[in-house]
Each structure stands twice: as C-alpha cells, then as structure tokens.
Amino acid sequence: MATPMLLYGRKHQTGLNWITAIAMTGFHVGAVAALFYMDAGAMLAAFILYYAGGMLGIGMGYHRLLTHRGYKTPKWVEYFLTFCGTLALEGGPIFWVATHRIHHQKSDREGDPHSPREGTWWAHMGWIIKGQGLHHDAEVLARYVPDLARDPFHVWLSTWHWTSNVIVGLVLLAQVRADRHNQSDLLRPRALTACGQQRHRLPPRLSTKLVRDKEATYVVKRRGEQHQHDEQRINPTVEHIAH
Image 1 (tube, helix red, strand yellow):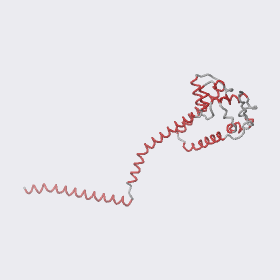
Image 2 (spheres, one colour):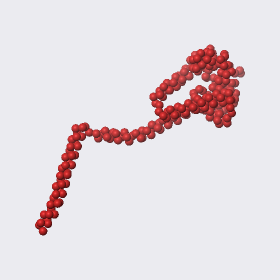
Image 3 (cartoon, one colour):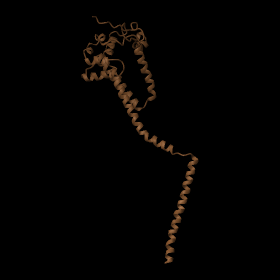
C-alpha cells in the first residue's frame, strides 16, 4: 500500500482546525491572566521553562540535533533535549522534525508548509490553525524521519507529547499550593492577634470611664495602705507607753 502524500501549503490546507484554534486561544488567554499573578517565583519558573522549552528543547533538540543531526550526543542527552522540546507545546518530535525537513526540502516553493511567500500571517500562525497539517500520524510522517520512526522512545513521545506539560503543570500547582499553605500558617497568628485586639477594643467613652475607675481604685487602695502603715507605726508607741 502506497504511503499517502503530504500536501502542505496554503492552497492544500483549508478550513479552520477548531481543536488547535481553541487550544491556542486558551494559551494566550491564560498568558494574559498570568500577568495579574506575577511574583518572583512565577518569573523564575517562566524563565526556566522558557530556557528549557525554547533553547534546549526546540533550538538544540528538535532543530539542530534531530532535524539536521548537526552534532552527536549520548542517547540520554538526546532524549532529555527531546523531552524539553515537548514543553514548548509545538507537538511531538516526529511531527516537528518531519515538517521542518519538508520545509528545508521545499523552501519557498510549492509544498513548503509555512512559506512567507504565501503571506506573513500564514507563515506565522495560519499554517498551524488551518487544515490538518498538524494531525498526520507517525506512519504517514515516517518516510521523512526514518531515524526517529525506528526509535521507540521518539515514537512513544510523539504520541504522548502532551503529558510532559501535564506533569510539569501539576508539579508547579502543587508547589503553589504548598507555598500558599505555608504563608497562611505564618499569617494566621498575626490575624488572630489582630482579631483579639479588635475584639477587646472598647468604645472611647467606655474606655475613658474604665481608666478613671481604675485610677480611683488605685487612689483608694493607696490611701488604705497608707492608713494601715500609720497604724502600725503608732501602735508600738502606745504599747511602749502602757508598759
């Protein structure tokens, strides 16, 4: 059975791909919402993921290593860089490498998946959200990536490439929840102290009256102590005279 031909290019990819379009819209809405929850930890996590997904994953892994085989590494390094590439949300290694090899094979000619000759918008986003160019299975793409199609790890990761983002997302969510729990534990004593102070705070008039009462009680008490002291000082003298 002949392998189906891939027909890339603007005129072959028609109709909006709703799955990809909705997912991309959700990512951008989430990115805008994240601006309202930024702190030092979030900025650090964003920088690390940007570096891991974009530079290590796409630049060093998908592009230079897997597509062009521009250098050699131990297998575990190749697999690590490939895993990082999935964090960029650009699909699995077989799809990405096959598409990019086709792009170099037919650059700016008929069949180029994302040629700028077919429009800036098409080269940037149109080819992603229109047609079925992103949804060819590994068997169809295997003719362009025979080296990856023979590797069980790359085949598996091409099918389950989205799991890396789920795992990282759950780890970050757990860390955020832990941080908020720790902050609430630190703030709870302060909140209880503030509530206690507020609970025992009295209206100004009643507070003034209590202060005056305390002052009067103190004066009476001091007078009683003085009277008792005077009596103790006088009594020994009386007893001495009696003797």
